[in-house]
Image (cartoon, one colour):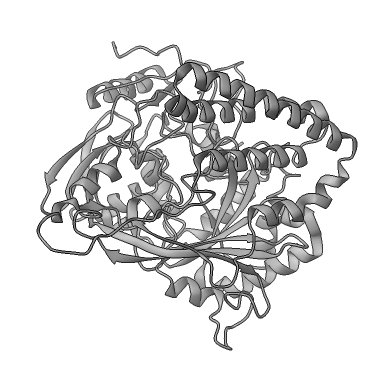
Length: 578
């Protein structure tokens, strides 16, 4: 069978659906695996095929841009993107799999732009998605397939999805529509590529809206706390569950470390899109007062200061998360400095021109490296001081909000609803295990985590934050939100920390086993970390958490008779096979 050839980066780059089908048939005929990557925002082993026999596996981290070596087929959709309007008046649009939600600044091919993203193009026509995650770098198919979602119990992204066009393991392709084949549609909704390759998605979009709100940081408990975090509410304060139920959009960053113990609340609501601003279609049709967007700023209004703040955090967290001078300095040189330099040069090239921008960037990098070398050398001699400094560093990055001075914002929904887009995926790279817990367990879980953190110190809290937010109920069989609203706990791990947090001696084990021991049901996001130990035991546990688990596995075997989509990673985690 003659298909497109593999390129020097190790990927196949189809530009048509016919080329994708050809690769699927090739995989089946030759007994190969075939997988598709989006923006590489999930852990790499969940995305890529297995390496070839004798070939080394790629690191199991987020933002891994290179596929494993070997004969298996790894697809990148950088040549297969775009959208087609079926009915502009009704917001019906078909979107190819490789289309990004927003601009992906880490796209290795450079094809992702704001102008060719789904959200920007939809906004130009007066439409958007009803909810968004913390970032919009992902491709449409990757975001959907892994069960990603925003933080709201008021609005549900699932409602925007109308149909999937899917290529199964035999190469057969068909549209699966929500209204005509609900069972298969709900199986495909969160399927991590195991039921076939999603070639296109048909959306019924939401009318444009603006988002307004504030971010405020308060102590976790006490008189100055925003809510009753651990209690049942009262005294003018709602409890955590009530807060999630009553707030249209929210995200909480919890810093539970001793001497810090604070929460940063991002709180947003909808406003009708203003004519000529949030809704270009309405321009000139109505006389409305001028509306000036004030985007949410996670760091600083000044781009250079934002990048400098993130560099400072990267230097500190790389040092505290690793042992020994050479490991710390090696990671700073290989990842952090390279990323910072490219961001600064892009900024200064635009402002000062190519030559002067290059000179200024290299002068700055010389100063950065001198400071970083001295910092790393000192704390390699006195590493215990890094722990002592941790509360000071966190307070600098996440200061308490002064009375009456929260961070206020009002902006187009597609731009400020993803509140973490400004965080650099390399300098402040964040991995996590995303734990979905039935909403009614919220108070019990908060009390349990508080007790655990206080009893275990930094071993329990880690050096990074924990993210708290809600998850809307879903009809998708393998969605962590299947059957009811959820309380989500994202335990963060700095990307460049030493070790793997999912291994038997890793950081995440304490949380998975704590919840299971206490009899608290939970599910995990399919693109984030799962336990890398006791595979059979954990597969049985998660099987018990999903009512349609066995139905999904039976359908998987039927739609992929040659197991071309099934990797060793998914055999371990879903089937318990080692």
